[in-house]
Image (cartoon, rainbow, N blue to C red; front, side, top):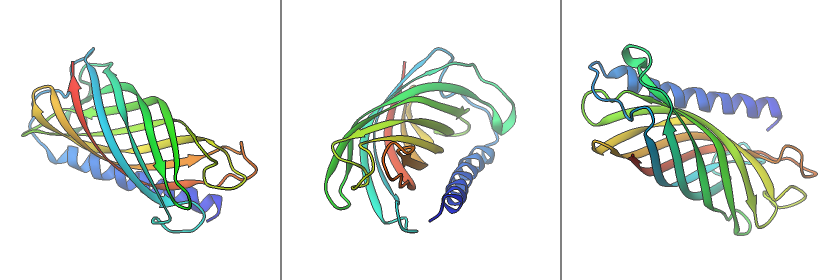
Length: 206
């Protein structure tokens, strides 16, 4: 898949994902409690699975499994009105577990120093959608993908999810994101991973 086609496919994935979660936010009518108050810390262990393409136009070409911890802080009070009302959260992801096994099992670890989340205000019931953007890097035990590529790659993601509150300051998080991985020409070749990542996490707001 050429660069323009990859960019177009990635843009469509991000747009569809964001539209899904914006629609969820717009469907609620009555305002209730904010997801987190300004200054609250947010700690969330999570696991995720991704499927996507590297060299062929197929979302089932490569699979990646990850696990980590998100640490964030709510940096604004509630802003906006109607379904757009919510708060901004900044955080980072520590990713000690990164595994893929397309042709050989490759392990790694990563760090996303920039994760921005817009937490829509919690409406009726226990559900609160969010959208997010993030990026960072990953270092693996072998070149990824195999060949004259690189063992260090950059990551970018965009998408959203739903927080399902189990207590006033605790929630189960189900997320769906577009995920991009490439080495920015650090290797002789720069194949890209573009795919969808599904995640499951649990948040504690302190």
